[in-house]
Length: 372
Image (cartoon, rainbow, N blue to C red):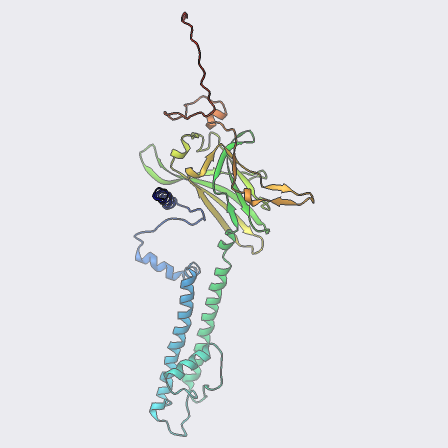
């Protein structure tokens, strides 16, 4: 029991360490922090207040929504209280019986706050109303009505924009948990599977990748997160994909590919991160969105291929079986790209070698008399 818990804990810590080390999480969120940002640059967030609120989390949006309305009602309630006090309308001022109030039935701070709320929300119960004898009260009701309309428009826009964000559409685009390397179409290819879980299409979809790694230049400069372009193709080409069913993306491992010098026994010793992007426009909302995910060396399987998931029923309908979406099967695959193309080059096997389970040991009788 203790050994099992120890193994689970080690696996959890390993996954957590990998999650922290990768730049892009599997769900597409970027794992990056900004430090030592100048105060004047932070002020830019206030200048772009619209984008700041749209990108703010819902809990803070709701908090600011409630606070803005409540604070505006209270501030204008204080102004109404000040007008009633100057006119002698309050109860503690003992107004005479023939006294004409600026706002009827505003006799304390509570009633002033209620009148401010009723004015800004256009409730108008009829118990409290402004009279024509106070020009200041008429001016204030106009200002508060305009301010209330501006606040309503702002928050309606923020909430509608957050609801319609294309990030939510990206949740219905799914990538395979791992990538595979196997022969395909006469060459060695790295493959990734992607699926659209909605029946509405992604128009003008484009797929590309970036390989992120630390490199050292000839001048001795260390470049962290050096980006190398990774081209992906499908059967229909690179652009304007007909994304109506799950697609398999192919990256040809040729001499121009950064995977060309890797092999089955050296792949997991590498330090890189393959980030895959899918850009497109949602057919239903005409909003552009980007879906991304990443693969580290431990998530790339050499010598495996994806199981087929598209079939045709007896009725002639096409069927997609998502239970096989991430499942793979072992296939005969060359040890490296050089081996596949029978090119001369250095051998990639490790010094310790790889155990061949199918090798059979037999005894060979060596004759005593031999000639060289």
